[in-house]
Image (cartoon, rainbow, N blue to C red; front, side):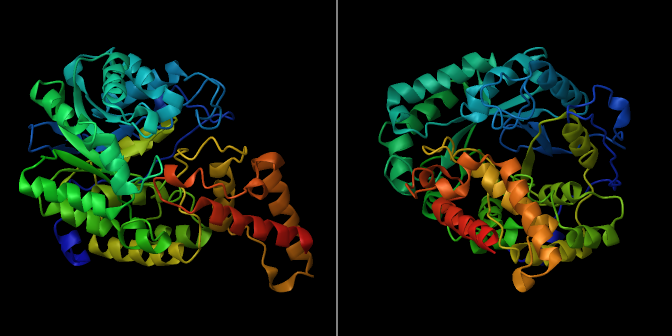
Length: 467
């Protein structure tokens, strides 16, 4: 699909402004007073699911990064329980502002996400919200028919419901169990008869919409859409990664990934509703260097990088909802503000974002979204933290300039980088402990060659130390 056609076909919405000033306390906990948040100028933008007639909120609540009692998320403090009061507070705000799509998985938040959202949503009438969850049978020991069915039944129990509104085959195209993307797909869903079983559950009313989320091997994606065309299986919706960087650069950043422009166009021509994940690319599109932010401010002085990315992801027609993994109440408030109502990206703004995508791509950052699927590492490396620190330093311009290693400025920058690295990632969990066992590669939805990137970052660190 041509980019100009993409802009031409955007959905219309009442124009809205792009300013939000949020407040949080020293502990980065959500402020319980909603008076500090800019109030939406209108109602939440809704999208029609033509399969069921559902009116779905354009903002979908991704329950992947929920807060824990110890602070931060379950990824940062895996032994801490979910902060249920904070989750309830966020859900209350979301429902009050029109958010009715809640996305979770048995794999999220150390397996605690479904239970937490089940508690939060069960306080409301069942017709007030739509639940999306996944058959996350990644591990070969869950590939059997019995284990996969047990996983689905546990989801119903934890979510305190007798049906799932949107059920996804989780991460099709990912390799696993020593098999490539195609082999893993057949092992997880075809050879065990589970896909046919899920179709039966849909007929029985226990699943209202059946779809899949895509990561990895494009041959699997194309095959499933071909099955749809042939009438072998009908997909009610498909979840893809879409943002202004991945639109044209997903494959260039990582040859194992597929550009969002292709994925979107394949869904659009079949009239399959799309669900968007990673509109902020794991937060990477929020943390932008000053040069990028200045360019955005010239276009709209009040808009944040997050708002630009969320507006972009919500603009194409045919997209049902845009998932945002939110940890604090201020995240919910900002996203509700941005989509109440959506102010679609204009052709001029699109040109700016594509130009900025060129610059961001040239930074050579690691395309990690901090999903944590690669963890735990058998050798104790904190993979997302290593990549996160490196990427943050790139985006903030804190990479020491090695053109003059004798300068005082270089020595200061080198010291600041190395000290910051030790503070962000404990020495025993840093990149130099990677032995390239490749255990992590098959678990990465972004299909990053993690050992290669670890070695690249470690070489950079060693050069800093030696100089």
